[in-house]
Length: 381
Image (tube, rainbow, N blue to C red):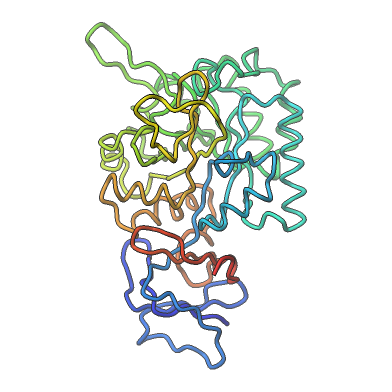
């Protein structure tokens, strides 16, 4: 048995100062105030030194570690993220990958996971292939602009059957409903997400009965708001905000470029504590910075003068969320662990609770990761 002592325990909606957390056989055995928890003789002690202790981070949407794509080197990316407190991750595949590239990436993920080399790899986030080709970085490389045909996607769905947890779609694409029904039949627990889209509220809501419960990088790569002259229309962002059943992903960079800090605060007010999910969406790009953003250390740029995802890891996104909104350490643990676990129906993850998987991180008041514990074992003490 192991015991974390001198901890500020971060529960879903409150703290336990001077807390103790016991771990045994990879699970949380007990926790509480030090005065209420008896530490067994011979217990291995981990001293949190007064820092915050919370559930390991769950990044449901990232393409790499800021330097390398997951599909190029899943082991390197997995280890980098683990050192930043990400104890569960869904590597994201995307629309510029053709069929063979999709299949090869999925094979590589499966092999690395089976070998035990990617201990935090939870599954795969399918960002495409059928998105709106007018939206997103490097959109000129979208290789899935043509008709949506079963002969083109069936093999990908079959390969991803045991790995895919989230599947992104643009609801306005012709033939997308048949695709969604096909994926739902093959992967019943799949979560669909509206992404890279200019869909109407009606088109989005029509897919909710099939499991559309997420808005990919909310307010990024979404469609026009034009309606009539001088009249603001409604589109993807308004639909995600309006529907209580849809979670909103947020890329929270230090400069507030992906989502303006005022917009983040507005989304937080609308969606509440339970429907925000922080993501890294780390990409790999070497384009020059947009003028005025030369010091944006956590943002990527393409060669077309657009932002191209981030260089974030989820711990930095949590810190940025605290700065931009005044969120507490307790709050951001919810946005980066509890909420994604709930979305993915992982009741043993995302929360300090008896019997849950002992994926735990220790952070300071600005969310600098001091220690990562994966299934009760220290990874970067």
